[in-house]
Amino acid sequence: AQKVTQAQTEISVVEKEDVTLDCVYETRDTTYYLFWYKQPPSGELVFLIRRNSFDEQNEISGRYSWNFQKSTSSFNFTITASQVVDSAVYFCALSEQGKLQFGAGTQVVVTP
Amino acid sequence: DADVTQTPRNRITKTGKRIMLECSQTKGHDRMYWYRQDPGLGLRLIYYSFDVKDINKGEISDGYSVSRQAQAKFSLSLESAIPNQTALYFCATSEPPGGQGNEKLFFGSGTQLSVL
Image 1 (cartoon, rainbow over the protein chains, first blue to last red):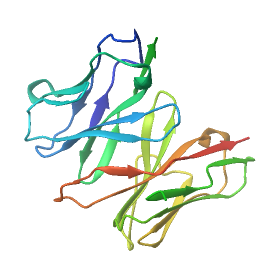
Image 2: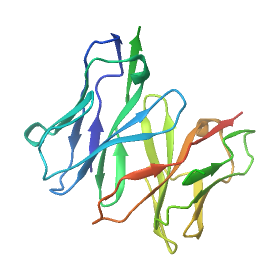
Image 3: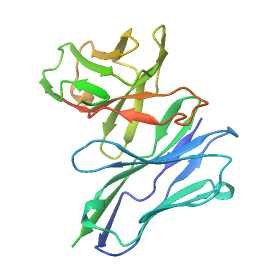
Image 4: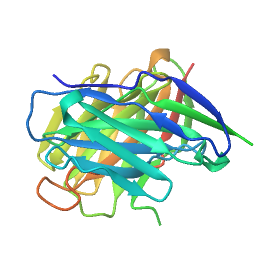
């Protein structure tokens, strides 16, 4: 069985603050993939990143960065200098054997 | 045009009615999925299909059925809708394992279903 836990239900920040979203996963597989998706108020699901279980390098893309730590089964996501447009629900997901299991999501609210 | 198209975008129906949600894709992917989203629960897998002749139950398949009419079409049916099936439904496709897009899902825009 696999499981994805996003313990933070909602995070509220003021614009320009940094925000870190936690994701902890459980799996017995040695080969798996981890994802982050963004769901803005419009409702569509936007792919942000995919990371395979053999690649523990952290990644930065603009104001977004991801910290993958296999030892703690965590794949955390940080938004630096948040903007109002970052307001959305963010989902962490674990994939194995072609199926994605999603966490419950973290609602990020960025106020001006 | 969208690569993964869901119809309808919104649907209101009554308890006991049969409902079909349709999904079509132009990405040429063999793998297709149906998820439902409920507040606080994230997305949960209902059914998935890895090719036209393959249909598999997900974690919450009870009360639902699917039909894979062609590589590009995957429809979800609620045989007798009930209020707790009110949710946002997403169709998705993916490439098979081994490619650069390994297991990345491409989602439709969603169908908001309300069962009264």
